[in-house]
Length: 73
Image (cartoon, rainbow, N blue to C red; front, side, top):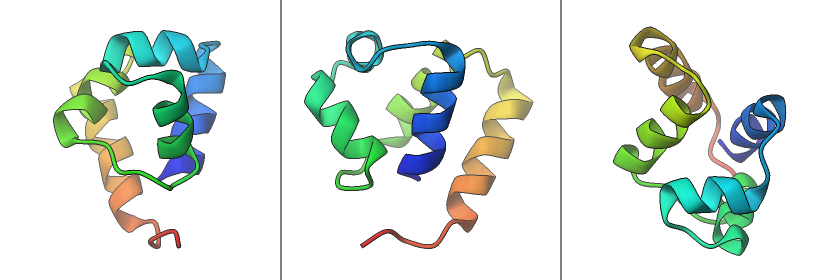
């Protein structure tokens, strides 16, 4: 999941701090989520994807892609 979230953030031109401000997480926590070391709640994931500019259909596609990814160790 983290790799996809990192790519989406970078593609949106956002910093870890900006994402943290939207999700309520500190930048270090966002980094851990992006590295697959921490999980993100569904509600915060949806909020984050909306911030990245996704509509409902796009959010569904991203969530589906994330669900299909193998678990990170």
